Amino acid sequence: MPEIIPTGTTARTRHAAAPLMDPFAQDSQRRERQIAALHDLWLAIPFTEPSRLYRMLTERVIAAMEGHTCSLLLRERGTDVLRLTASVGLPADVDESVTLLVGERIAGRVAASRQPILVQKDPNANPALQNQGEGHIEARPEVESAMCAPLLDSAGEAIGVLCVS
Image (cartoon, helix red, strand yellow):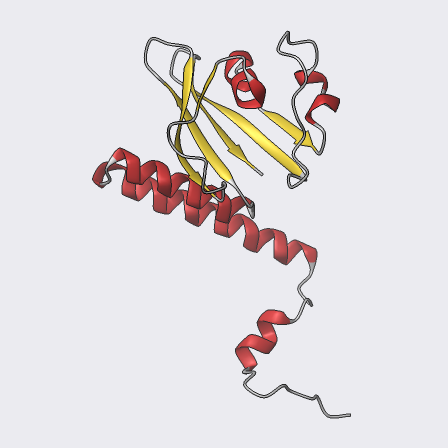
């Protein structure tokens, strides 16, 4: 039986839409995209203004991790304040005036512990987030899963947190 091809469909779009690739090849392509994104970012570091570089970082993380949102919070020097420095996919009312303290909410707890965390649906079900003295963390229904990783300096101190969901 001949293949029925929708009007305006090219061989390229037919191939891209076909889910016939084996899992090993898909994983290989995903890793290639991740490495390419990191390489592009690495090349840009010496020539890019920090605020643009932070934005590029969050964009590359979204692309490489196939996420929906990404935020970069950097610690203000000499304080326990984390400030939202760059983000992609967050609501329009969230801007760079957002701050939280080290130990506060998920990102603050990651900064305090200097350990990454993976959260599935309900953050309070994660043992790393329980009994931290901060209390209940409100689950957000639009977040299926999230990962937060601390950014550490050469002395092992948290200088920021990168979150992706």
